[in-house]
Amino acid sequence: MTHGICNLSVIPGRAENSDKSEQITQLLFGEHFSVIKKEGNWLYIRCAFDQYECYIDAKQCQEISEETFNELNSKEIICSTDLLQLLEDVEKKSYLPIPIGATLPYFDGQTCNLEGYEYNFDGNTSLNHTNETKANIILDSAFVFMNAPYLWGGKSALGIDCSGFTQTVFKIAGLKLLRDAYQQAEQGETINFISESQTGDLAFFDNAEGRIIHVGILIGDGKIIHASGMVRVDKIDHQGIYNEQIGNYSHNLRLIKRIF
Image (cartoon, rainbow, N blue to C red; front, top):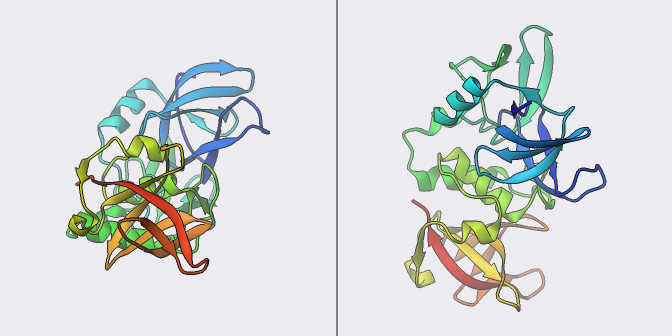
């Protein structure tokens, strides 16, 4: 296999070729990848969307041709925007749950296709938001994730980390972010003062060593939505995120970036 696609709700992407290894990311349904090497029952892959590399179980994916891989690279990404939706396998007459942010390859308004495997889809997609501004799409999508639990490496509403949250929300708006917070911090235009920020700007936070460790989405009115314990809304100022539950600052503001 040289190319593949996620044909499950999510596939865990791991740091090493073991089920016991740390999950560092996930592939959502419909996300495709190239195979760098095969090690036993494991594939070391590069995700097409963000070029992120990880190990996945070879049993948890579907092979696609190089032609399909290249076609998918050139096509507009259409996402499911429902918190959780069902796909119907046309041939098997069975159902597959998919999370918000899942990709619908070759979607024609009713069905999507994974190289011969056809699925009916009767939910909302990113096509429904084409007349909205990027900021409104980001705001609406972000709030769908409210109270989703934090999960290292997660990208779905059943478990998500801070940069998986921002990446998936921006994906729905048609914007590509890299996978990790420190990588996302290198994208876009720097905003010098929080007073100059706009809804949809990304705020980044560092630790005592100055390393970027957290990211969230500014939503205006001195507030931020981010994944910390769960997806939540907190106050933010020039110092950082103020968590009213603990009565103190939880994250130190490092910089603000505008992506669109």
